[in-house]
Amino acid sequence: MAFTAEQLVGNSSFLMSIRFLAGQMRGMFDAGPRLARLLASHQRWLLTQTAYALHLEYDPRDPTSGFTAVRLTGRITAHKVASRNTVLAFIEELYTYRFITHTPGDERRRPRHFEPADVSHQGMFAWIFSNLGALDLLDGGQRAVFFQANPSLMRLIQPRIARHCLEDVAWREPPEQVALFLWTEAGGLVVDNFIARMDLESSEPGRLSVGRVETRALAADFMMSRTHLQRLLAKAAQRGCVGWYDEPRKTHLWISRDFVEEYCAWQAVKFAYVDEAFEWAKAQIDEMAI
Image (cartoon, rainbow, N blue to C red; front, side, top):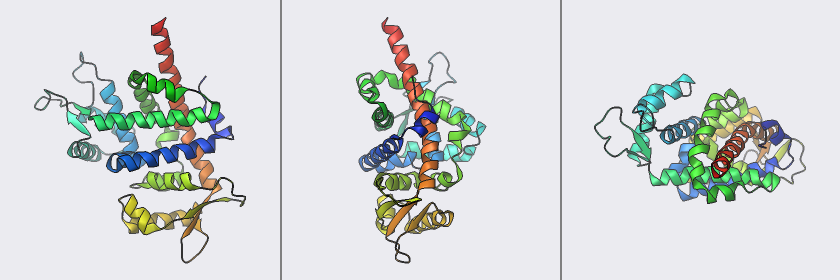
């Protein structure tokens, strides 16, 4: 049985899983910074997952199916995630950086179909593998191992995760404190960095130590402007999400337990859909083997 979001939030080890995944996402960023940035703001996460799902759902008998500008625009604008112009600019960026290519023979045809490049397939596989690994930490499961041994499961799992996440307002529209980071450029990278580094042994009421944070180095690391990062942290500090132990020098950061709890509850929504999609896909495979 797959975990529900409520069960995940109530699991005392869930924060460890969240921290594990944050560390994995950091590893993905180091391996391919430009590709990782596609998942680093919530809007781009939704665009990327939806585009990839459309590609996997392509049916050769239906020329209107698959990943086309019209289909991605339709699905994204229906949920008010982004405007048509934003979607088209996103597709153009993917194509420019060679994360997608035209489907062979489709260069001059309408509607023009796109498909992910090998690096994009690898990135999405690594994302699902990491999420399954984080779930395995909770119950000693073998999801990640099974997925690695059966890579064809990707075609079943990813579109189901993408559709459920896009359609669920609880995931599509993050809670206020989380949204402060996740709706900004590279904000997801910043949160992952803090979550991966926070001291879970901290006995301080209301906050967890992140450690030394140098905004200049962090901004350069994530290919964002230092001014943008400082503004983001200032807004977060005003809301009480984060703060500094050493005002006004601002070198040692803490993150509030309220923020971490809100972030975990939001992540639980996605993790539950990942687990449900895995269990559903595995059942399909098991059924075919009978």
